[in-house]
Image (tube, rainbow, N blue to C red):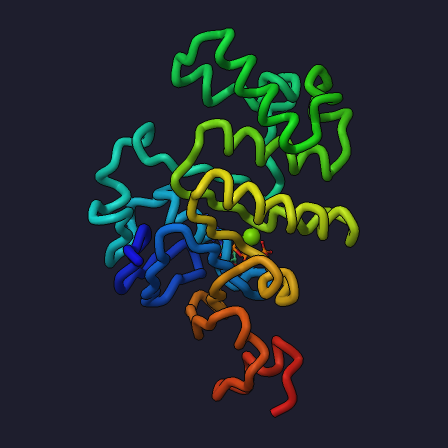
Amino acid sequence: MNNIITIENYNLKLGNFTLNNINLEIKEGEIFAILGRTGSGKTVLLESIAGFYNHGNGAIYIKDTPINDIYICNRNIGFVYQDYALFPHMTVFDNIAYGLKMKKVKKHEQTEIVNEMAKLLSIENILKKYPGTISGGEKQRTALARALVLNPKILLMDEPFSALDPSTKNNMYAKIKSLHKKFKCTIVFVTHDFNEAKKIADRIGIISNGTLKTIRNSQNLFDTYEDPEINKFLGIAN
Ligand SMILES: Nc1ncnc2c1ncn2[C@@H]1O[C@H](COP(=O)(O)OP(=O)(O)OP(=O)(O)O)[C@@H](O)[C@H]1O
Ligand SMILES: [Mg+2]
């Protein structure tokens, strides 16, 4: 399989924090989890993949092109933020339609696409509401819909499920898997929950203190590691 994301010897300094020499290849169509404790650098790494920083050393490629050489509109990357970052003054419908509007998609097509996506995510009943009046789970699905209507090649999600209750989480895991199949995109998501990573991802990278410690197939996630710190994090006896 071809790589869709390639990170080579990437370093990024942000204040006192550093992402250290990250090397990572993500294959087209795979679901990859970035797993780590709070403050380990998960969001910064995800944002780096999205091309939010341009002062890092090393390289991040999408296919064969450095991310920062691709014009933003042509990156084809969807991003679901940790806090969902919905526009508070816009209805759920307008939030989801936002990217389509920017792309100057015709009004009636916008309506069609938004309605179809809302149906897929079971949020048809809240399209007229404002983000301030909907639940966490509804916000999460709205943010996901807003990213998916643009049919991204790469979907980046930052702790998308952390605010949800266990049964809603399980529903969303299944939903994500079916959307991944339907849209044939590559998904990279961030989590601090190793069971969640194992349930959804094909492969998992464990990050600690800005360093990508190891990458594993998810079926081997709980096999013992050489690094005692990882064993401790995953609750594996040494
Ligand atoms: N713009 C910035 N300037 C300076 N330091 C930053 C900046 N952004 C993040 N940091 C620091 O970098 C470290 C990693 O942050 P990051 O947001 O990637 O953590 P995280 O693994 O996503 O944590 P969480 O699970 O809590 O979301 C933190 O110590 C954070 O304070
Ligand atoms: Mg974070």
